[in-house]
Length: 257
Ligand SMILES: [Zn+2]
Image (cartoon, rainbow, N blue to C red; front, side, top):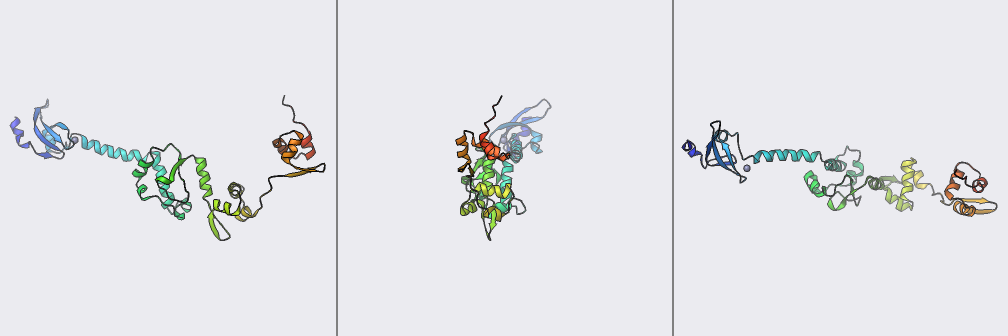
């Protein structure tokens, strides 16, 4: 019986080299002991080996499955959409964000063009935050990237908005510096109050100290409030409600019952 398989010894079928005859199994099939490329020894049914139904100790299938599930697993990892958005911002000319990224020359480092590399670099630090560049004018690469919460990122993104004024284009932060105005004030005017660029940039900054003259004395709100022993918030609120000034500072705070 064994001699029948003698000529198979030493032959290689896919990953398996036949070492010796092993036994006849309960279905009367001859079984051979084989050495797999991976180093494992395994018993296989001779006919299955010869017909190529069995190609390895099992390691081949494991590899295929793990390759498949790795690929699948990564593309559903949250980092994948982070990566994809980054690529899209920098390279998809039709993307709405392209003008603030790709069009400004922001690139993704060569290495991160492959998702696997980005994943390796960023997976340990990732904790559901958003990918942000430390220097907004520089590219996406490991040393220039960090995870930030969305608020910080929104701020960074805001300062990145390009504004053209008097035929020059630069980001809002640069305009704020140049005009010697607060970034937040400019941003509020442009995007919350929806003022035009000219109005936002040219309207003088209102004095934060509102001076009020009463009984021939001119003081700012804070000073009036201190003088009459009420909080300046209360005074401001009363004036906002349309109270006249005298009433606003003289009527005491109603006791809370
Ligand atoms: Zn194997």
